[in-house]
Length: 364
Ligand SMILES: Nc1ncnc2c1ncn2[C@@H]1O[C@H](COP(=O)(O)OP(=O)(O)O)[C@@H](O)[C@H]1O
Ligand SMILES: [Mg+2]
Image (tube, rainbow, N blue to C red; front, top):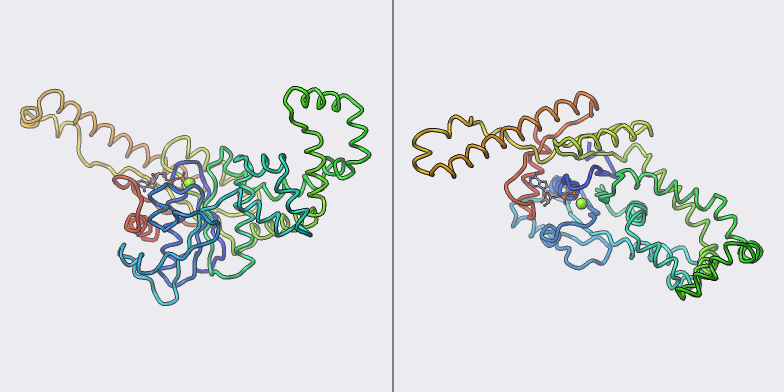
């Protein structure tokens, strides 16, 4: 599936392993001989350093084949792995720079208080900038495959709606109103809003209204560019060579979120190309009774041997829960492909760890 795809979007609830799986998928496809870029979002520190992402400069960096080889990954002819950690603020700024007709309107936007708040706010900005970056990388055409990790947002689908929301914003009434800041602005300033803003300014020293007006007049020259970009992003997400992979764990809440997400994708005409159930607890294959023997109790003492028996119990329950969760979600979503990845000991923070994840994802 991935050797035919151009874009792979890895979505799912927070904390299930999206970033880890994205890196593992990208690494494996690079190993098989493709030029692959992975766009990660907030990678854990140690994973970031394993991929050489200490410095965030918002463009993909090559993960040298020698580095991969040290982790036991032998890359086939032509294969290249590139990785970047998304910096939403920088991406937004770059977007403005790209769309600005001239240097002064660019600076006007970048310096504007409203813009700084808007672009720095994590909610929404991360989603939008993730797809904007994806679009940029895809348009440049330097990669066979781009793997996009998605932000840990409460609504995992926010990123899908981001382009549409942006288009609506520019097409909509809000924009029409502020596009004529002179006349409408005066009218509003004369009414209740103006008084409110005036009071705010007096007490906070923040002249919100004039900041807003400045922002919209500065950005007005970029509206067409934004709208076009949003359309391009929407088209890319709808393309048949863009595949969606959902990652979840076997726990109740993530399973419910993953199911919701998959159904939303289906409603939008996007089939679930693959489902990855990650961090599945292996069956300990041992019964409580087996550790309640006289020998164990004598060797460990009463307290420790009871704890051991409880731990065995907990492990069995987790394994049972994951197994039934897996059966349930597979039956209800009927993904085109299913992969099950066990919970590894400790964190997955290096090339070897990623290779183990990849080995499980790509096994039969
Ligand atoms: N199969 C696995 N076994 C053990 N730990 C895992 C596994 N997959 C992910 N992790 C760990 O779980 C944590 C969350 O993973 P991450 O990829 O950052 O999740 P997300 O991007 O969905 O928030 C990380 O510490 C990661 O190392
Ligand atoms: Mg993540």
